[in-house]
Image 1 (cartoon, rainbow, N blue to C red):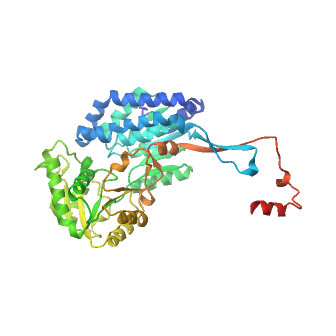
Image 2 (image 1 turned 90 degrees about the horizontal axis):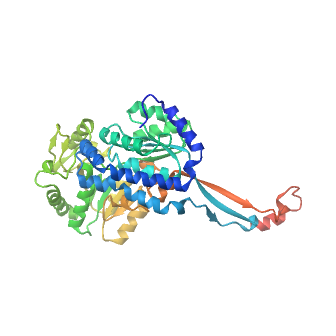
Length: 459
């Protein structure tokens, strides 16, 4: 952790000096740091779990699954780093012979990672893995909203890494603003679209490239040709994980009207199976992060007819897993990302209607489609645009390390996970090596008498 007396500019200068030594370009150094990071997580997992419990009342199972499980990404990077970092030879055209062409991955320099509060540990460590693997120095700005987890992250990083290599800057909006005034070599931001625009505007003043992992209203379309029980179970799990505070959670259902009632009934049964008669007493259901978000969600409960759930407790920031019916597209709950345990249920008659509703909204981070019909599956893929698609499940696409994760349009810019993380924090330097053995004179002036030959060559 960096003490508050040190200004952002001083931290940045220290890291630039360390980067200039070339130490981070050494693959052995990077591998050592990745191994140190993994061990630090394992050594401090109990403290991480306690912090997540304090911030969200997060169940231990979910803490392992969605936060500490990031060590699998570290393992993947360690396994593949040597291959990722090798220069890649590409085809050399005939006119460039004798010569050879390569792409050299090289680190960008000093990068800034700004993380959100909803998965406060995972969404720091996951991009950090890519930044370390690519050979960068890193300044981390964790969310002050999930302050218990932020403090643990700062403590872990301080114990594990020297501050001129990896630093944590804690604080609120002012700390973020101070950092954004500096010129970084890359800014990686996870959060809402509105703040993403502010980050991008600040970065533009220094021509700093950005990765923006945002969100949006991720639709879940349900066809009539499904396994209702499995569909309901997967929707309930993906929606109410982390009390709905997941950027890729199903935001609303678009259900074929012929199966709406049996699906809703099955969802009700799943909620009882998962969380019991009273989810407030369940050890497996979390809480809303703070009073501001709680109050916002309580207002959204007024957007339709509650068919299950709806119970709230302001003192503990509890909102029951809730289904809302009779929701129109112009109600408040359909105008913003819900980011909580409230699930509107809309219906459609023909698949084209559902596609039109989705396409009239800003492009979402995720789109879910449940159907056995492969023709319909292909239609969804061809006629909609989203950061990613998951067919016949929810949220699980994020667990495939080889799949780049990112948004499109309002839901984000750029991607990460696996090699995509390495690529995000690398510059792909193009290199052409030529020999002195041959030197074709046609390209040199004077050009008189050479044009016809050039035209034949170009074709």
